[in-house]
Amino acid sequence: MRTPREILLERHRATTPKLDAIRREVVWEGRRAAVPKFRVADTATLPMLIWRELFWPCRRIWAGLAATWILIFVFNFSQRDPAELLARKSPPPSPEMILTFRQQERLLAELIGPNESQAIAPSKPFLPQPRSEGRFEILTT
Amino acid sequence: MDFVSFVTFCPTELNLFSPRAFHWMKMPAVAESEQLPVQQAREGKPEAWDALFRRYQLPLYVYVFELVHNEQTSLDIVQEVFIAAARHISGLRDDAKFGSWLFGIAHQKVIQHWRKRTEVLLEEIPESPDEFEDGPDDLLIRREQEAEFMNLLNQLPPPQRAVLLLHFVEDFSLEEIARITETHLGTVKSRIHYAKKSLRTLLEEKK
Image 1: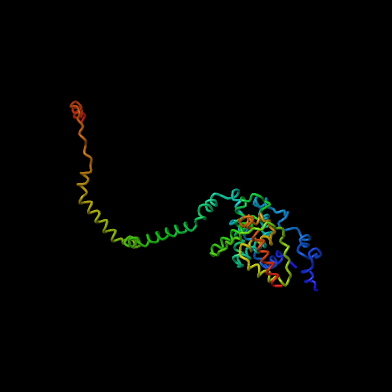
Image 2: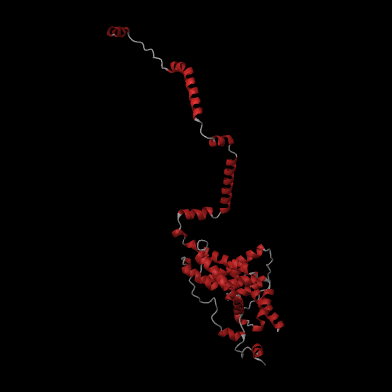
C-alpha cells in the first residue's frame, strides 16, 4: 500500500536528471538570466546595465533598426555616380600630357598676364601735401 | 482471507494498516516545519537557491505534468517557475510560505499554458461541504490499483485534479491551496471533497 504522494513521485522519479540539469542551468550556468537579479546592484557596471535595461528588452527593435541602416548604406553605395568612381580608378596622367598642360598654362598666363598685373597692381593713393613740402623734396633731390 | 483483503476489509479500529491508523503513524507532513534557506536565497546565495529548487523540483514537476500531460512542456514550465521565483523573491512576504508561493507561480504558468491552448477549465462546484478532516494519506492504494489510480486521477476535471494534486503532493492546507489556485476556500473544500469521493467511488467500482 502506498500513498498517492509516493505513487506520484515514484512515477516521475526518472525525470530527476532532467530537472537537475534545469536547476543547474538556472542557478549556476544561466545566472545572468535568472538568479542574478539580487547581485545586479553590487556588481553591474554601467555598460552592462545599459545593455540589460535599454537594449536587451527591445532587442528585436534594435535589430530591426540596425538592419534598416545597413540596407540604407548598401543602397547608398549602390547608387553612387559611376563617373566619379571611374575617375578615381583611372591611371595617373602621362608626362607628355603634363607638359602640354603646363605649356597651355604658360600661354594663358602670357596672354592675360600684363593686363591682369596692371589691374592687380595697387594704385598709389592720392594724398594732398602742403606745397612747402613739395618744394623741400625738389631741393633735396 | 488473504493479507490484502484483510487490510482492505478489516474494521478501521483494529486495522493498523487502515488509512486512519496510517495517518497516526505517518511521517511528518512534507510541508511541516522545514528549515528552508529562504533568507539566504533572498540574499542571493546560489547554494540556497540550489537547495530550494532541489527540494521542490520533483513535486513541482509532478504537479505540472499531471495537469499538462506533456513532458517537455512540464519541464519548460518548471524552468519558468524557477526563473520567476529567483526574479520575484522580493514579492514573498512570509518565508514559511515559500512552497505555496512557488506552487502558486506554477499554477499561474499552467493556466497561461491552458489559455494558450484555449482549453475550458473553469468549472465550479456550487456546494461546499463544511467537514474536511482527511489528510492526504487517508487514501491508500494497493499496488495493483496504482495504474488505475493514475487513470482515474486523469479523468477528473482539471480544477479538481489541481487541488487534489496539491493536497496529495505537498499536503498544503486548504488556505494555502486556495491561495495557490486563487479560489475561495469553500471552492477548494468542495473540489477536494468531490475529487476524493469520485476517486473512492471509481476505485471501489474497479475492485
